[in-house]
Image (cartoon, rainbow, N blue to C red; front, side):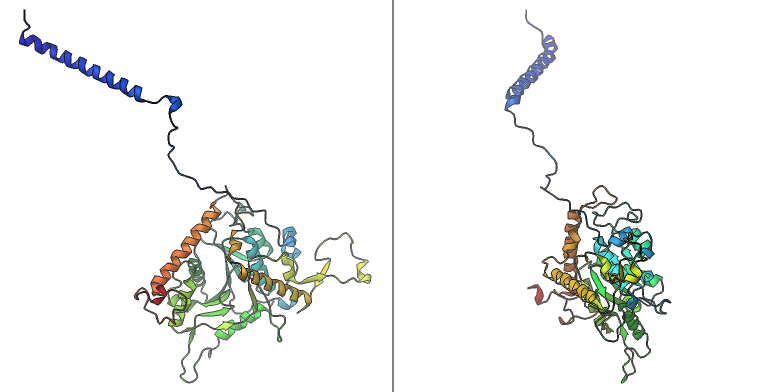
Amino acid sequence: MGISLRSRWVFLPLVLALGAISLYFLRLSIHHEAQPRPEDSAPPEKKGPIYKDVHREIAPPLPEYFPIAAQAKSPSALPPIPSWNKPPEQHVPESTRLYIGFTRFWPLLQQVVVSYITAGWPPEDIYVVENTGTMDSNKRGLLTIQNPFYLDYHRLTKLLGVNIISTPSLQTFSQLQNFYLSEAINNNLTHYFWSHMDVAVHSHEDKEDFKSLYMRAVDVVRETQKPDYLLDKETGKKGEWGVQFFAYDWLTMVNVKTFAALGGWDTMVGYYGTDCDMYSRLAFNNYHQPIQDAGMVYDVTTSLDDLSILYRRRPKTPNPETDSNTDSTSTSPLSTTEPDTLNSTIFHTLKATLEQIQQDKRDDKYRNSWQLRQNGGEGEPYYYDPDGFEKALQMTIEVGTKINEEKWGHRGCDLKAAGVKEGDQWRVEHDGTFD
């Protein structure tokens, strides 16, 4: 008996379902057989970053370059400033604020501060500008000496008596210069001094008519304040000055009014080239930039072995009449030394040593290698990888240099010789220095 058409439609869904199930298991079987055996399969490729082969040896601990300060409990335990360099007991009427910026390498900061103090600069006039980006970590003693951004807050403020002010975040060189300018404006200063931290200074002891480095700097301030300073007697017109250079800008005196009139430093040019831009703009606007001489200023890359030499002490000359009454157990450096004299053998030894350190820096292919001598601090507040910091710094320097070249259409610092002038910024095509 045949199957009716209606019965055939009843069996159709069942046939289709059985076919689908059969096809599913067939594909599953084929896929399983195609898979390699576990022992024959390669390990899956790992996804993620590929790390550099970085091997970093932590530099050995820095030596103590100022042992007597490390033992001192109060300023009275430090040697006195050489008598010929002592500033007046009553501060001079003129303002002599000195800014010294710091980012890395504590030994050089300590040296420059001590050298200015022992050359007569009043400690209360010295302002260390902590530009480390570590907020209050140094003030709270949270950084170790192997951290590039470490400084000894207690020694600077409590023993040496200088001031510390901190930038709100890490700043470039040009930004730091505008920070000085801002501080001067906010404190109603007409002028101020600033110094690089990688220098050391001393007075001209081997010149006639001796004056300390500080008092020679004061003389420059007084000169600029005379009514006839830069007065053209023929025309009766009085010129304006922008900066007073002492050994280029290793030590510089700034006229607040002229720098503010030019809008300060160009912060788009962060490091190298920004000085060319600033001083060229001063020249374009007829602001004078005299070269002065207050004392010796050395460009250095390392610290003297013992900063006590800057206080100019020498071994005490034996005196049988008084030595018999001296406690033989005393080991105080001050009890076994006496003041040196002006222009002594010790002075010339110091001068020769600093000259050699300066020459060593000139001979170094990377003149700022001192910035790389500390690479510790991992795990401390605001830690930044030292190698990464240096690489980022060099990239920032390179970008700033290119910006300055585009700004003036010229490569190099000789902007006036290139024929550009005030108002040409960002308006000139590349000149032949780009060929």
